[in-house]
Image 1 (cartoon, helix red, strand yellow):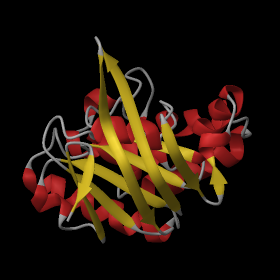
Image 2 (spheres, rainbow, N blue to C red):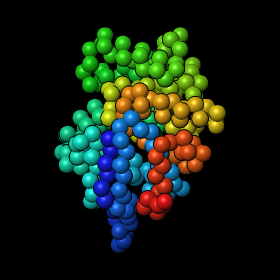
Image 3 (cartoon, rainbow, N blue to C red):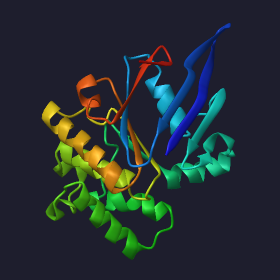
Image 4 (cartoon, one colour):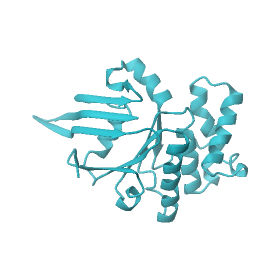
Length: 222
């Protein structure tokens, strides 16, 4: 569950204060796939950084699964990002010298999970995202863009996060593959009972989401 109340982020630009995010209220239940849409410069990236605890707001609160992340210390935020949040990027960001299976296992290794259970979960997740077992031993360079994004999604789910943030997850894919990936995210939100939020400029892709947030000049609009 994600709950955002009066979230604001200001930047100093010379003598002026710029509000990149303005008094945003959001609520997304667990198990729901939602989307944030808006033009370039609307504040999507800033909002995503705030939700992912990569940046701190000027005011307002962010609550994930009953925990106010805006109250956490810097050291607590490091653990929170590792254990409670999954990130999916447009460029996949897979480790090139690791296999698909090893890429998915990596976050669990950082979290201190023993090799046997982390390998078992990685195999399960790759199966859930539809990557065939014969491809789990391949490195990213031997996978298509859609297959690499499936691995990236499985990796984001590795530590059973309460919130997954996807930044233009279909940006490097053709429209047909992009539709498949969005359908997959929607299915996985329910299957893993996690809140998934995708940032996209593509309204057609966003229409697949259960909840759509429209961002304009840092504000949510109808």
